[in-house]
Length: 115
Length: 113
Image (cartoon, chains in turn orange, cyan):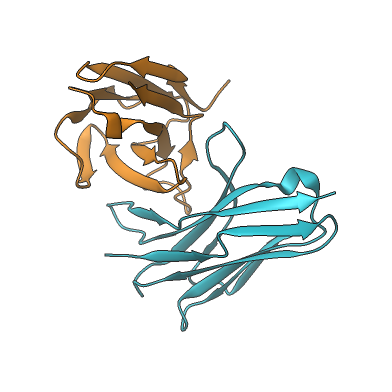
């Protein structure tokens, strides 16, 4: 009954590889996000999707691409992985339009280690 | 763009004491201020939030105060318990279509038994 789930929880890979992280939410929310948390715990938004439309794209390298097959899923694809991509990646979702609060609900995170 | 600062970066208190974490923001248009708690190995979880039309909000041992004029807001935890030990993040957001949350750098709270 997890609200926001991510797979895998841990991902270890070599530099130059391409990898994907999956995210699913069963809250019926309209907007989903990807955040990167670095080793100093700083949380920085990478992307958000609302009804399949990208509405925020911070200064993230184009090696990172979000893919949303439907409203409940937002996957993160990373090409040509670099050492600096090592971090914990969090997926989140929020209700848009309907409620009076815009709380973001976070998944458990995916720890990516690039060797 | 919005900039959120948070102090202190680390905080140690004795069990039963109070803890206060302060945040400042730069964009006067921000109108939503949530606080998240992140335990080791887990994702951030919302613990309390406040909107700009309210000056204070309380939920049991947790309270948040907002001073819009000074552009700062604070988290207050009373009667701290060891399970309150975690990293706490404040955030500021403008309630528009962009849903752009800007998080503070976090405060590591340790409650000593």
